[in-house]
Image (tube, rainbow, N blue to C red; front, side):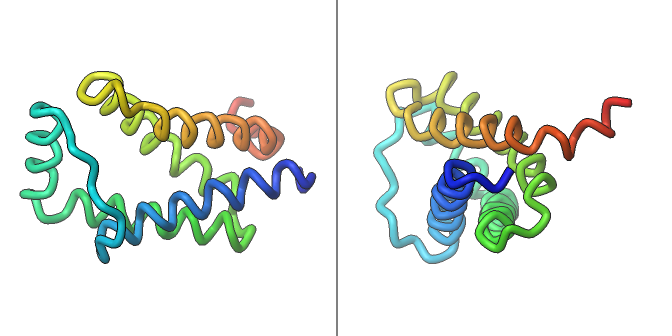
Length: 124
């Protein structure tokens, strides 16, 4: 579980999550131009006042857990539904920009596979 490959993947995923999580509060990364439907969806999420900040907090917390190597299997499971939603958003609303979503999801899946022993008791 603590191979160099796994450590690199954890750090990479953690940094991406921290960057995008912090960006929801600080806004240091420019927002990409979105298609009309995707833009409407994001505007609706922003209008709730809580969805994007809640996702940002989760991304930051998950990123910190991965960086600090604390509760990694739990962090990866917390990230799973976020990864699925990122993929679905891009699949249905912004297909040309799906690359980043695929990277996050693939990293999450690989790391879940690497930590599979921690999840085995859930299936007995």
